[in-house]
Length: 100
Length: 100
Length: 100
Image (cartoon, rainbow over all chains, first blue to last red):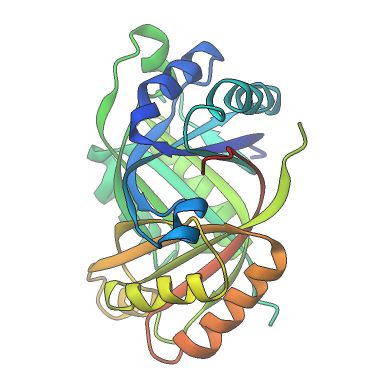
C-alpha cells in the first residue's frame, strides 16, 4: 500500500471570504475540502493589541501538487490584496475510499 | 531536545463511522487521538451537486510509523468499502508531557 | 512564487492551560495562532479507561524554525511538568497576505 503523494493546502481566512474561497476551490477543481470555524489572532492584530479576532474559518483540501500551486497562486493574486488570509501547503501521503 | 519522528494520521469520515474508527484506533494501540466535527464536501459529492455534507468528523492521532502503516491498511481493507473516508499521514516531530 | 519554509507548531492541551500557552506564544513572538476545541483521549487516559476527556484545545501557529525550537523548549521546560500537553512541528510552505 503506497498511497498517493499529495499536498494538503490549509487556508485560514476571515469568515467574510468563505464563499469566495470555496468558489475558487471549485474553479481549480480542488474538491473534497473540510471547513470549520477557528478562533485566532492575526499576526498584525496581535502586534498592535493582542485582541482575538473571532469569525475566522479554516479550510483544508487535499490536491495534487500542480493544483496546490495553482490554488496558492490564485489566492495570492486575487485574495491576498483584499482579505486577511494565510495559506500553507504540507506534503501528505493519502488514501481514500471510492465513496469519498 | 530532539523530539520523536512520528506520523500524524488524519482520518476524515462520515459521523456514522466514528465509533468504528475510534474502536480501530484502540485495537491498533493508536492512543491519544483528538476529534472534532468538520463541514465539508466529498470529492464525489462536489462533482455531482456541490452540496455540502454535514456531519463529518476529523480524527487525528500521532503514532510511530509502523502503527500508521497498520492503521492505514486496516482503514483501507475494512472501512473504505463501506464508508466515505479519507486518511492521510504527515511526518511530525513530537514532544509530549509525561501526563499526556 | 516560492513561499516561505516555516514550521507549523500544533499544541494540544487541557483547556486549563489555554491562557498560559497563549501567553507563552506572545512571549516568544509566535503571533497569528488559531485555536479551537477538540475532544480527545490522552494516551495515558486511553490506556486506563478509554474515557474521552472533554475540554482540550488545539492551538496552531506558524513560525520560523528558530521560534519553533524556542517554543517547544519552553513548553517542555515550563508546561510538560504541570499540564497534559502534546506538541508537534510540521514543515510547511507558507504564503500570507499583507493583511494577516
